[in-house]
Amino acid sequence: MAKEKIKQYIRSLDIDKKIISCIDSGILILDDELKIYSINKWLELHTDLKEESIIGKRVDEIFKEINLKRLTRKIRTALIMGTPTFYTASTSKYLIPIKINQIGISKYSFMQQDVSIIPLNETKKLVALIITDQTNIANTNALLEENSNKVKELNNELIKEKDTIDKKVLLIKFDRKFKITDVSQAYLELLEYEKDELVGKHIFEYEKYDELKDLKTDIIDSINKQTVFKFEHNIETKNNKLLHMLTRQVPEYNIYGEHIGFIFFKEDITASKELYEHQEQIILNSRFAAMGEMVSMVAHQWRQPLSVISSNLISLKMKKELNILESKDIEESYERMGNAIQYLSTTINDFSNFLTSDKNLKEIELSIFFEKSMILLKNIIISDKITYSQKIDSNIKISTYQNELVQAIINIIKNSVDAFEENEINNKQITVEATKDETNAFIYIKDNAGGIEDKLIKKIFEPYFSTKSKNKTGLGLYMSKKIIEEKLEGTISVKSYNKSTEFLIKLPLIQGK
Image (cartoon, rainbow, N blue to C red; front, side):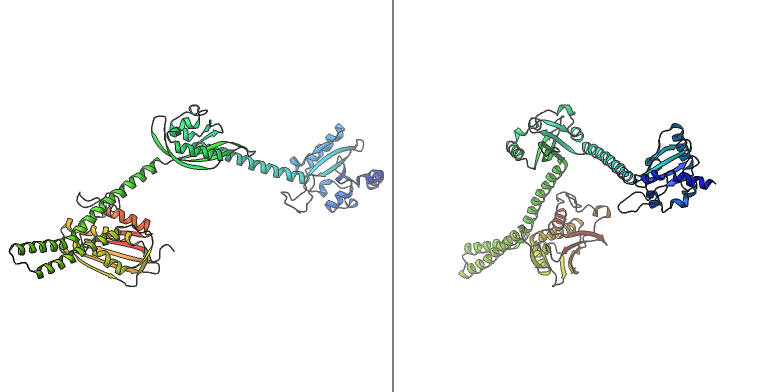
């Protein structure tokens, strides 16, 4: 009897069903006990259910996930009030689960729905549930929220970045009329100013470029051309402390691309400038020291030929005074003195050639290189009774700056010579050996001059450090290291054992290729 009544009621809705079947939304007709009276074609299509199979059944028998309490409350409210009530996709997500096709990128697997509950018949307690697909809107809102969160994160990062720039970067801004518009906190702290002491001032008055007219002209020229310009200059803090600054002048534009002024990005290079000047002084001192060494070596080289010239002159004078001078004596003395003078000239040329800075790489054979280099130290080695030996593979050839390498080698060997004298060594020996692998040549210079203490060996390449007497500069080994590592692209190390010291120089076989 109940089913027949339902069929009769459905027939009474035939005219309405023709209308609702054309609506592009889901329509579900229920009573207050949640029994299904009708569904439209849209709902059949999206749920794969047929109307005749679910008529008279409770909605929760068909859709198990439905929130019965919420739906019942909404239906009764609509019937009592005689006005529509609503589910929203943002709070309920969906009334009934409808799978969606993932054609594009979506955050949802089920259709997001807005549901309007409209009272149809207060006597029969019937309502129509109109289900609207809100997936695209929900998806867009979710993406907007996600992007909004990203924007917030980026904004927070920008705020942090701006704060970091303000605290870490030295910058000062000025407009097209040269008035200072902004100064970073870092710059203010460095110069010991308050912000209101600088903002509004003319940039040239504040930084006193009038004292550097050429620089001021270049800055103004760059400003007029709106180009980037880099320069160095001194600036005083509020308390008259002098700083050396590296400044990069950069044009500033607004968001519309309009030129509004300039930014000076500054770097305090006072310490590096002082270090550079200190290193320049060290290099200058090392040159004076090298000149002293050169004079000393020249004196050693010249001692014998000058002695020959002196003795021949004395001999000629004595023979003349004794009236026994013969033409043969004069010719022999002239020849001996001529040879001695030629030796003096050759010695000067050798020193001049070796002490001239090389500008070009040369391919040299190490064994021949050492033979020529030792000519400069020959007389010192002989007069100090030092046994010198070398064992160098004749196949070792390197591409290097020859004269710079000579300077480094002489500094090392001269260091051994000084150590022999300082430590009063009797059996003095210096040995040089060289080997190679596929890419490098290895030069070992060893002496038995007493070795170096462990606590001192780490310092021997430092400028002005010396284990010898006070009249030594302590620049020889420092300059050797500087030449080998910076100019020759090699390395130098030292070790001491059994009262001996051994230097190892590693140089590339082919340099600059």
